[in-house]
Amino acid sequence: MRNGTFMELCDLLSPALKHQNTKMRAALTVHKQVAIALWKLATPDSYRSVGNQFGVGKSTVGTAVMQVANAITELSRVVTLENVQIIVDVFAAMGFPNCGGAIDRMHIPILGPDHQGSQYINRKAYFSMVLQALVDHKGRFTNINVGWPGKVHDAHIFRNSGLWERLQQGS
Image (cartoon, rainbow, N blue to C red; front, side, top):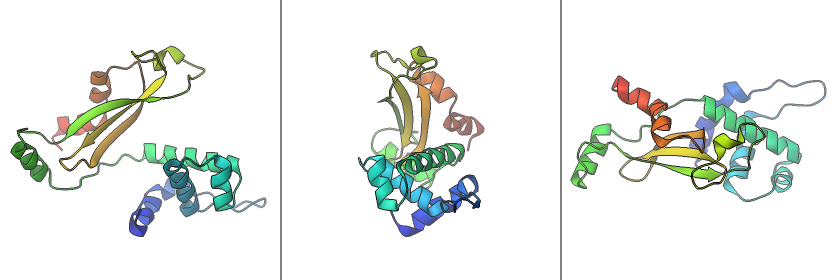
């Protein structure tokens, strides 16, 4: 990841991740929380290994990952990589007229939750959460929606997404 991208991500997440120092300990900086979370999510390292890498405990790693993930979830932004008309024109040249992206979903296997477990069992009979993603003509993600229980139908997820709302508004 480029330094500028990392700094922009930290700036966007700063309001949700900024903590005050206490008499007992100094709070982790936003930069360190984001770095810990990105490292953990990008590598198969254990919490202990990531904690050793950053000089924090394994429970601090878990907390940082959850707080960063929650902050990203609450941050609702649309990523526009190019002019939408360019994307539509390229898809038209590929034989897909009036297409602004390719959308699909996938089931991410999870451990069964303690509450409402039956809602997370998908049609293949395993616990999952659904990730819906939209990509442009170059395969770059332009919209991601994640967190729906595995039992929820694709159309319901799409109709309740921010992407659907923006399409209805014409934006």
